[in-house]
Image (cartoon, rainbow, N blue to C red; front, side, top):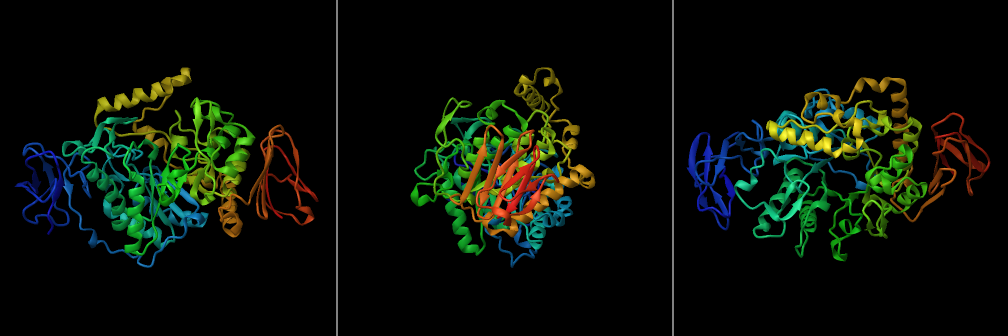
Amino acid sequence: MNKLRLWAPETEEAFVLVEGQKIEMVKSGGSWWETPSEPAKHGTSYRFSVNGRDFFPDPASFWQPEGVHGPSCFIDHSLYNWTDSNWQCPPLGSAVIYEMHTGTFSEEGTFEGAIQHLDYLVDLGVTHLEIMPVNSFAGRHGWGYDGVALYAPHEPYGGPEGFKKLIDKCHTKGLTVILDVVYNHLGPEGNYLGKFAPYFTDKYASPWGEGINLDGPYSDEVRSFFIENALMWMRDYHIDGLRLDAVHAFVDMSATPFLEELANAVRKLQVSSGRRHFLIAESDLNDPRVIRPADIGGYGIDAQWSDDLHHSLHALVTGEKQDYYSDFGEISQVAKALKNSFVYDGIYSSFRKRKHGRTPQGLPGYSFVVSLQNHDQVGNRGFGERIGHLCDPLLQMAAAALFFTSPYIPMIFQGEEWGASSPFLYFTDFDDEELAEMVREGRKKEFASLKDREEDIPDPNAEETFNRSRLSWNERDQKTHSEMLSWYRKLINLRKENPCLLDGDRENTEVRFSEEEKWILLERDRIVTVCNFSTEERTIELEQTGSKGKILLKSHDDLRLLERSLVLPPFCTGIIRK
């Protein structure tokens, strides 16, 4: 049996309803309350109250079997029989990451359904499975970024037991697991944290409402709430690494920033557990302080998503110039991103109408995660179009070749590798119809620039919107899809078989290009990737390659390697070994 505890600093009394029995709690030091006895065992149902009348789920509930509005259930994590005692995740620099959304990845839309496809991922060459947020959120399906019970795996996916089984199976098959977590906001439905304590502050605003209280009164416990959540996933669920959503949304004036404190806590856990853990941040600030060590003024995060290579490649192959893509579209920007990671490294951004970013000088390539697609860049479009819906397949193949042979960590978004036909739309399942209507109208306003298509924006709360986003696994064997899948397999194998592609050495990365002729050449030691993005045949001189060059991969049969040059048809890609 165990005592139940609650942090509630601004109340004079606290109660818990345990299996229908109301119990008055007692102060346990500071702002904490606890039960006078030990009423909780595995599966015990309970709710908390600070007035004795209105009872709500535990802010740190481990299990919400009846959804985010239902009672919490106590979990004894020691009861799960793990089989991964010898597991140790590989270095992050060797990763090929695959981003997965549990609800749409399989037909079942569950953790168990995902397990059925793990062998496929291993065969593809994936080393790290990145799972979009699984914390409990309102309704049956959603992206997970509207989570409100941050400690409790979503019950419709399979709950805590199902999630542990998925991670255990991943480790058995040699897959590292990354979990996407959201600490910059909570969802709008089922968010009861504010009923108990000042987790939020009106001092700062965020795109989602009040900011998280990271530096105001009582913020020590708020920070501990999120840090302990991160440690729980690693300790109790054996998660290897976390992807931290939108850290640029944190407003934190503390002398020791929250991110630095979190990174320090994870390092301490590594020492005590003997297992390797890591943190990856999403940030649109182009600020290398996120990933620089704390002893030289950084936050000590291991790696960060870097969007500039995605933006420059996307704008180049699609021709899109709306919103932030207006800052991109030139071959020279692709070249700079391949060499420097950040295109905007302190230079003027016309989209932002100010200078943006700072140079990441001295940081290795494996400090950055790059992608051609991810949930944001696909799902935040009005119609969820993938890159394959927007450009010629050969152009997708060219862009993929560049990010797989770049000095950075490549990430694939589910289905990208076979050119999946299904879109990835924004979907929700709010019970509150007023909230659902607000989201529905908000999406239409967001894409008002589409004019005659504005009314066609899929309803986020409609079941059909969710169902359309499911992967169609049977299409992998169809000709166009199988050709794309074969290309991705070859690129992943190429990366694994050539250590020079894994060393993250940006200093040993050479890039040549022609803006006028729209070709680019990326050289990493003995591996040379050449892409023709034009509609005309191009002949590219290969410096110091000579007749000993060997074609490793080509996306078009008419590609020819001459003594000192490569002849590429339109949209063609060639990779050679010198």
